[in-house]
Image (cartoon, rainbow, N blue to C red; front, side, top):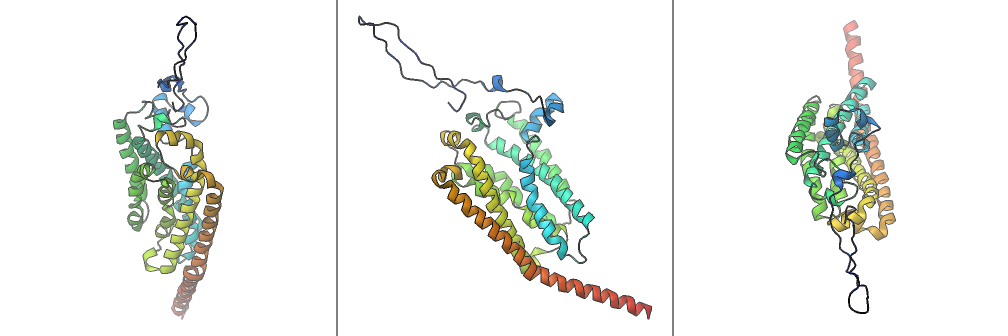
Length: 317
C-alpha cells in the first residue's frame, strides 16, 4: 500500500477430490522497506557534506533550491518596485545588499518551513511515495531533534530580520503564523495551496519598509503592494497545483486534501484562470505605482531637489 507494500497471493494446495485450486483474495501487507530503500546522496551538493549533516540538509531541502527562489521572488519584486520611489532614488548597491539579505532570509525561513511541515506530516509522509524517505519520516531525525533544529532556524531568521529597518519586524512577524499553520490546511481544506500562497508571497510587502517606505501612510503604495501580493498568491497556487498532481493518487489514499484533487477534471481551466488573475493583478500593481505612488514620489523628488538647489545657491550668495 502507498508504494511500500507487496501484495501476497496465497493458494491452497489440491483440496477436495476434484483437486480444484482456491485463491484467497489479495491482502495488502504493509512492509517497512523505507530504510532499506534509502540511498545516501552520491552526487550533487549533499554528497560533499559530512554524513551526520546530510539528514538536516535533506530536511531543509538544501539540494532543492526552487522553493527558496519562490519565497525570494516576491521580496525581490517589491524591492525593485519600491527602489525608484525613495528620495533620493535607492542606489543599485543598496538594492543589491537588500535583496541579498532577503535571499539569505528566504533560504533560512524556507528551511524552517520545511522542517515545520515535516513535523506536522511525520505520520502522513510515510504513506506517500515521494515523501516516505524524508529524514523524519524514515527515522533519521527524531521529532524532538527537529523541534530544536527549528528553534535555531527561527533564531537565525530573526537575526536576519533585525538587520533590516525596525519597521520590517512589524511587517514580517505576522508571517510566522502562516508558516506554522500551513501544514494543517491540507487536513481541513482542498485549497492548502491558497494558504501556501499567502505564506510564500508575504515578501511582496517587505521591500517597501526595507527601503524606508511606509505602506500605511500611502494608499497608492498599499494598493501596489496588495496587488503584487495577490498576484504572487495566484502564481503560487498555479505552480503548486501543477506540483500537487505528482502526489494526487497517494494524497487521495492518505486522506490529504489538495486543489489538484478538488479540480482534477478541470485543471486546465483553473490554471488558465489563475494565470489571467496573476497577470491582471501584476498589471494593477504597476499601474498603482505609476499613477499613484510613482507620480507622487516623482513630484516629491523634484521638490526635494529644488529645495536642495535653492539652499546651495543661497549659501553661495
